[in-house]
Length: 254
Image (cartoon, rainbow, N blue to C red; front, side, top):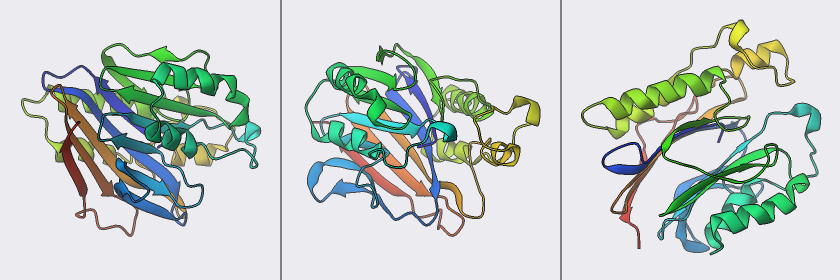
């Protein structure tokens, strides 16, 4: 994912409301969200190149999502795919804190990343560019291609949009997904400086990205109620996608 907005214990009904956009090259082969053939407890998309995933959830409530850190000057093409960090957590039973401490011991193995890990009783964040694993307290958060809550324009606008959705009398799934379609380019004086040229900083600045070869491919909404009911919705949003074909999975945590 390249933008993750989430409200943790900030709504009277939902323990977690998470809305995210996955940005990727349009040509990279990807499987849509589904329960995996090789592990029927895991729900998520699949990267058919690296074999991992950017976000997933299990029937027992293990959750994980990942963003890359944008640092082209430090990118190592030979490094292992970061999507396996998510996949391995979802398939395992290790507690989030222990899993993150293990990752911390190998932090230089991967290119830069952020990862969120959750269970029905906890939510954790860690970046191999940002120090120690952190247990998250109730709040509203935003995560893009820098550390948690770094105030990039897309993060600040996205958090505001999610808060507005939460403040409505009734939280509707379509309204939250629609707020991820914000394609307004940020002013130059608000852009981060991440090592790409100014034109790319502009193109990458909105929550929803469209370029000739790269952009937002899917929007995802995950809600989990306090009594364990899950809704997992994935909407394809790439230029040639049919946005009416939303994949929706609803189930009770076991």
